[in-house]
Length: 300
Image (cartoon, rainbow, N blue to C red; front, side, top):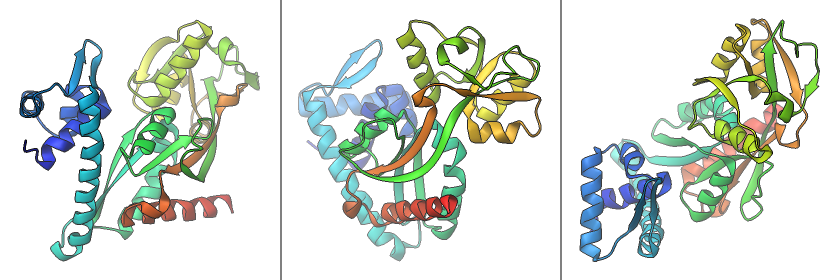
């Protein structure tokens, strides 16, 4: 039985993505090559590592065992690369960062750009996920750092405050809701909706909230950014839910109005979470310290 780091990395990507296709994309491999590698691993072990279904793949018991060891081995390899990177003169380390949509679009770009400018030999593997997914993946050791909404239970992790924002509703300036100050989510579902792409974490979050009420989102258009959502809302196509920070920027130049959403989940206390701060790789620890410093300055 001989697996190289590329095999182990691919397998981790496939399990975390729940799909060989998406895992292959993350590993920068062609689907055929990725499938062949997985089959070769199963043949070498003499057992199946994945249960394949129409909805994707899940690890078997043997696959879960392999995943645990793969994460340890890949983590050790990453630490080795960090320790030797300074001598090699190339990329000294890679940080695996998971974030929900709000933090990723509104706050991380500035924080990461300043950090990476200070650390030219570090790279960041950033992936968008739902907050509850992030908590589980950080607890499993699938990534170094997570940024999650404060509404999820992350008590088993080490946490630090990051930012505060909230979701709001944006409507066209002449919409019949434009004079309202606040609205409940169920009433929003009566209107045509402009949202993000289906795979985005926030869109899945809102679809789940609508499903719990027993009603669908009446999606007319799905876009790639909150700013574009505001722009399409301005032209009367529908209403949209975006972070308040986005809405306050947009309302300065667009003919839209902003309404608070009367739901507890609309408030977004964003939190940094890690499994064990003291055991983080050096560059990951430095990024957490950088984010905490930026948070302190933002709240001052």
